[in-house]
Image (tube, rainbow, N blue to C red; front, side):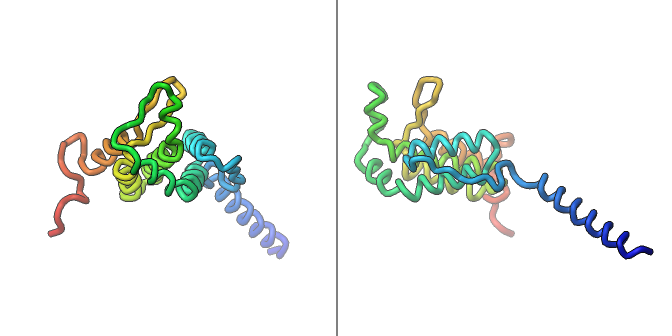
Length: 176
């Protein structure tokens, strides 16, 4: 057998393995993350866009950046409230920018973790959103505010119970 033939087969196998690996990478893999102006609204919008595009790695990177930069301000804003800020005029709600964006980012984090199959992590993210940022509101481009904390609370409850049987999930059953 010709030694060049053996080398050619080895190179072909390596190329095939590399091609298979390349197509198995998640969407957006290797793309540079652009934090833009680093504003909380920019990071949150980019996280939504990445989640919608299936780029879970980028979505998680954006939410983690927003949370790391603005969580303390968001907690202060949350502590200053005893009820939701007025939704009209919109500027009243937008005054709580850090709270709104960090709360929304915890919700997005829950969505990312769910898509990755990490239900425990997702539940923790949803619980953090509902508990620590309950007065967060998110502007929907269709023209209204929605409340990530309320949506997160519902998602967390769904993770606790199998909604089709109204029974606790296996994780809730005591060990034998």
